[in-house]
Length: 423
Image 1 (cartoon, rainbow, N blue to C red):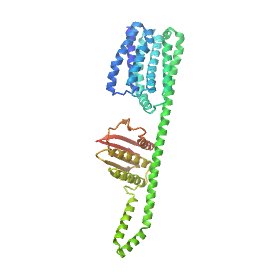
Image 2 (tube, one colour):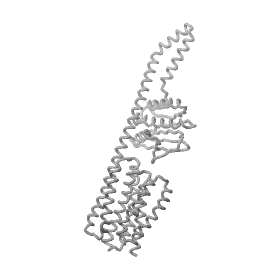
Image 3 (cartoon, helix red, strand yellow):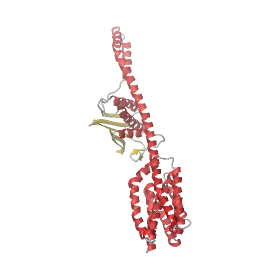
């Protein structure tokens, strides 16, 4: 009966080691294929390790765990991994070290309270592993995947540190004999088991801080770039309005000249001069779509760009003269959204972009809809650019919406890509 409990606890441990690793690990294959391949490869490894315990004993099985379990699974999951390199090795060491912590803590508890009858060990593992998995899913899985995706460098030193502690735990436990047969070394093992989670918490805190600093720098860079762009357009609009004022000021003199042409029956000269005036006025005209000046500047600019690219820009915007948000922020959101929409529409047969905007209870509601020519890939709730050094525009839009505690969404709907936000 005792050996059955021991064997069941080993199987339970190895299965949950796999489960925890799959929670934190990114495979390059779909989940169904990943699960099938993992089962085909790992079930024989689990059987081999259980047989080692039954035939060779706990001590020898522990010494063989690296060649019979760790190395084969390391190679297999490395081949399957989406994020290879030090990120993968760190994840592998983290999960294995967590499992080793539970393994040795439950062994110690069994030796202290169960007189090595495996009852305490089996019962404690039966409870601890599901609790750990619950905590990983609720608190660690999402931020850890975020770290993996956004922190592509700087994992090397942490992977080496994790591997170092991993080797120390195994060495202290099994060499030269199992630690339960060397009770004078148990305090040292306990100290190591305490230091390991402290070390990992420190590592995660450092990584998280680095990601936040990196994202803040990228958002700041993107915002500065977009602010510069919008300010240049606003400046250009001011220059256009000044030109229009000059034209209006000169209107009286121009009318006198036209009148003189007509009096002297110089109709061809009068017609040519009138055509020139109309052309100059059209060039300097800022179309009015709503009462807000900044919105008109952005919409006029992108309406012109859309026309030049054969794109129909359908505008239904009703924004007041004064807004509850900074007008430059609104201009950045609109500019990025329209630029992305027009660029995508240029490669489609249906070259039509729609933009809607209105206010309600001091909130601005904005929607930009456009067709798309290729499959849209999402990273969480954000569209992911397939090109390097792209995607800063959407990050700027999101940063501004979040600045005002607003909400946003990017989605595909009826063969159109839709951006909506309220700020």
